[in-house]
Every structure is written in C-alpha cells, then in structure tokens.
Amino acid sequence: MEQNNFNWSLINDNISQTDRKVLSDFCLNGDRFTNGKKVKEFEKIWSDWLGTKYSVMVNSGASANFISIAMVKELMGDGEIIVPPIGWVSDISSVVQLGLTPVFVDIDKSTMSVSYENIKRAISDKTRAIVIVHCLGFNGIDDEIINLCKEKNIILIEDCCEAHGATFKGKKVGTFGDISLFSFYFGHHITTIEGGIISVNNTKFYDLAKLFRSHGMTREASEELQAEYRLGYPNLNPLFTFAVAGFNMRSTEINAVLGIEQMKRIDFNISKRVENLKIWIENLDSTKYFTEFKMDGNSNFALPLILKEEYTNKLKDVCNILDREKVEYRIGTAGGGNQALQPYLKKFTHRISNNLEIADYIHNNSLYIGNHTELQENKIIELCKKLNYV
Image (cartoon, rainbow, N blue to C red; front, top):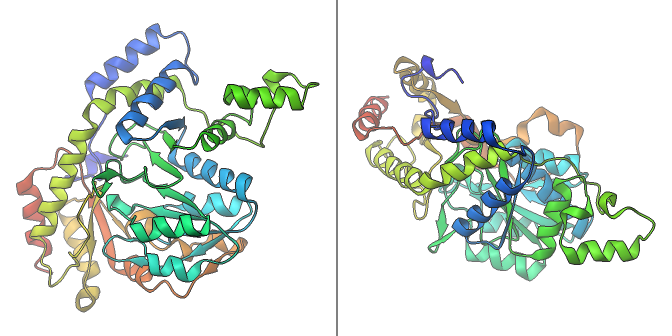
C-alpha cells in the first residue's frame, strides 16, 4: 500500500509501535506459532466483546465467508443462497465454488444492504441461506429479515467484515444471525494483518466451524462429537478422523497476538470513525450528494459519496478534485460495485431476482474515500467544501 502518494489515504498505519513491540517480544520468546493458546485467547476476548458464545479465528474474512457457506451446505444440502450485489467477491465466490446458486437481490440505498422486500420476493423452496452484508459499516439488519429467516427455516449469515461494532437496537451486529463473519484485514477497524473470525451461538455450528477450519479433523471438535466418531468409526485413528471435507484456514499465533493488543483500542477506533462520518454527511451538499443514510448504529468503514441523479455527469469532476487533493478513493463503493456484473460469474449458474436498479446506480455513480482515526475535522470540512463546487 503506497500511502506516501496520498495526502489522504484509504487507511492510516494502524499498527502502532506498541503493537510491533508486542509482536517482536512474542516472536523472540514464543514456543508455538501456529493455531494455539493465543488464538483461543483472542477468540474469547472477541466473543466477550461482541456478545456471542463462541468464535473461531481463521486466516481471513474470505475464509470465514467460505466456511460459512460450507456449513450451510453440510446442514442444508444444495440449493440457493440469497446474496447482495454490493459487498465483496468472497460473498459470492464462496457460494459458486461450493456448488450452490447465488441469487442476487437489490439493495436499499440508505444502507446499501439488501432490503426485506427484495429478499421476500426472491425466496423459493430452494433457498438455504441469506447473506446480509453490513456494507461500509451501516447496519443492514431489521426485525422483518430476522423473523422471515426464522419462519422459513433459512440460515441467516451476517457479513460484518466492514462493520465491527455497528449496532441494531443497541445490540452489536453479528449477534442476530446464525453465523456472523468479521475481517481483520489491514484497513478494517482493527487488524491482525490478515485474519478473520466466525462467531456463533449454536454448539453444532461451533463444531462445524472448527472442523472446516482444520481439515475436518474431529480432534478440533467438542468432546461429545469426538466420542461419537470414536464409537462410529472404531477402525480409524481418532487423531486422524475427518468428519467433513474441510480446509486449512487456521490462523497463526502471531496474528492472534496482534489482535489481542489491538482490541485495547477497538472502541476508540469505532467512535472516531462514527464521528468522522457525521462530519462528512453534515458538510456535503445534500442537493448534489445522497446523504439520507440510516446513521443509527453505524460503525463506518469508509466515507461514501453517491451523486444525485441530476449530477451523475459530474463523477469525473469529483474524481479530478480528489486526484488534485491527493485523496485516495475507490469507484463503485464496496468491492468495486455490483458483483453481478463481474466476468467470473459467466462460468457459474446464478440468478438475478427482479432487477438490480439501485445496485447499478451505486456501481456507476459513487465512490468512497478512507475513514480512519487520524482524520481531523477541519480536513474533512475543507474537502467537502471543494466537492460541493462540482
């Protein structure tokens, strides 16, 4: 990441000197570097902070995506997964690579997450799960979606990779679904450099997450499940009994050590990003830019900029201002915009429910810029003034 080319980069250097000291001390004195007691310690800290019973640390948020869909397939069989068009590629690639069918539904512009009405329209007897992405840190969950999943016996997956600490009705997102996913990539609210986590409340889901993380080996699972397989497969070595066709998506102890240290400042990081978004929205010209986001409970990942219809011909001018001011940005918001337009999908069965009108609009008429703890209020206001002249 060549941040020196920008006056305002997507992310600041969020690995502190204290972090580096903790890491170096561990590297010099640690006696185990693969998945071990530090990973377990971080999982406990994370679960306590989030408000779930169990968490399973993995090597990336994308791996968390993949494992969540593998769990759905193991429990529910083949079928369809309702997915958002605005998110990250791994929300979709995990579905198609595991042989299920993604069904794209349109979003609500105020959250950039899939809407209840569009989800309801897309559900069929083949629907196995719904993926909600809390896009850019805006809350995308509501009671209607939660109740619909319960009523239809559909697994609800919350992708919170950009939304650490976002809330719905005062409770953190990632605690409402059956499975929740977080990323600790370099640009997120805290980082383990690469890394991710799966959080659940159900013991069966917890066992499955651990199995899929580590080759499917039963020694990773609960004592009860291990005993079940010892009785059922007496001719197999219990250390090398593989209950599912798993993967190696384990974390290292080094990533966990960094995560433990970063958790000391996660609440500050979130509060500062929320404050920055408020300043950003209040100072943008609402006649030119969409500002009617649902701000309640947000935990902003990046500062969104969506042009209103009368000004969609001004996107190039906006980019020119950002280039001149050396502000790093990404066109199309999260994941480069509408995933349903990506070439890889031509190789796989997929379905679009109704249309993706709002997702297409976001794809063509929006961008985001970085939001991080070192941004100063006057810097945000000054950039808004320049953008308001387009």
